[in-house]
Image 1 (tube, rainbow, N blue to C red):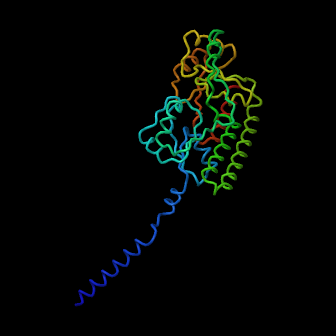
Image 2: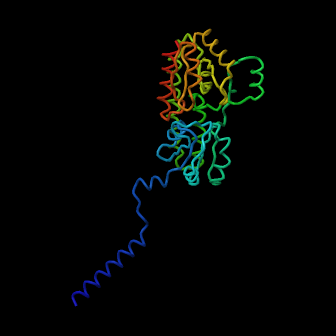
Length: 305
């Protein structure tokens, strides 16, 4: 009899808690609730992740396609990334070369994902190579390839940040004031660093610098410098062009060639040996954007005097 009473009591409590569980909404951990509310967004390169996170703050969950050590010129998204893109609400494109090949496929992977072109409102500069001769210069002019490296201008990042802010407000108008406050803070930081770099580079006597890949056209434009690239549009120079670059570097007193990890430094090293100079590595794709740009400006001041 006593055992039947215990069994009946146990069945009662089991039924009670089952009913309570079924009638109550599921309770998620705070971190999981936040992740469900955040706007899942994708960007092409690491600096963009910094931009979106500065504006979006805790309301965004940002993923990057081109990770450290990879080139945005030749990158191919992995199957896992393509699957993740299917869950995204926003994609912020910037104009790097791999987008030209993959953007249509990325959009097809998630037709509901909004694609925001952060170049809106920006006048792109032409991608310029070293003028080896008049024939080659005419050849470059006929192509008029636009320079995609707009994230390396603090002044153009301000435009990109405003485009990001507008997209986030459109997707999530309830947090408009939050995004606008974050934007103002970010713009202030960009203006402050721009003024500091202007001061850092103001006293440079040498205004020309040699690079392997022409990533620094907008940076040079902002601060009155001129980049001399070894390769343009992914093409290595001919033997004749390489000889002319070496002569030019000697004539101009250039002793440093800037290279980045995403490209082979073989030709840059050949030029450096020929001019009795050296290569210096700088990274245009680091995520810690403001710190990285300041560090690069200080490197310029130190090595191209």
